[in-house]
Picture 1 (cartoon, rainbow, N blue to C red):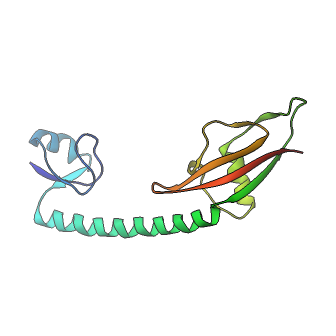
Picture 2: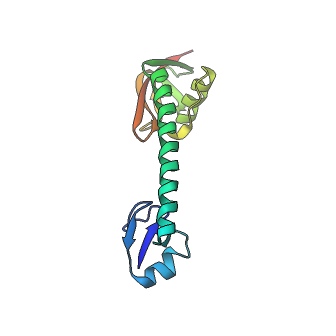
Picture 3: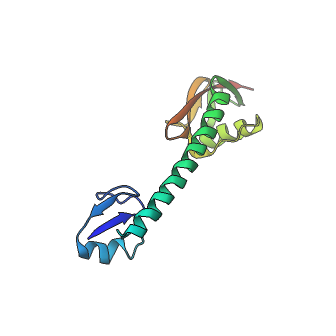
Length: 147
């Protein structure tokens, strides 16, 4: 049976693709889960329209991400923290702390966009990646200094 995928299905294909699958798989899994529709002329035309809308939306999201990336490139952020005698932080700096400080500077970035390998536990200068879009990444410099 030929079906048009309505969403990405691991091992089968990506959204909008026309795939040949076994009848039972289509009837018992893909169609009831609303992951695919039977490939008719009407379904193909509708998927093309949805694909165009999706591409326009993704292009707009990418444009916004690129504008924000230009604003963020080379941006320097200073966070003051309390430290002990060995100049180690009490606790650590996490993605949430960086996001709150960015918001205080007037830059609204979601927590999931800030890429931090591990929480920051020492004073210093760190280069942090901010992934605004799957294809758009920016770097900010975070200065961790003592109070």
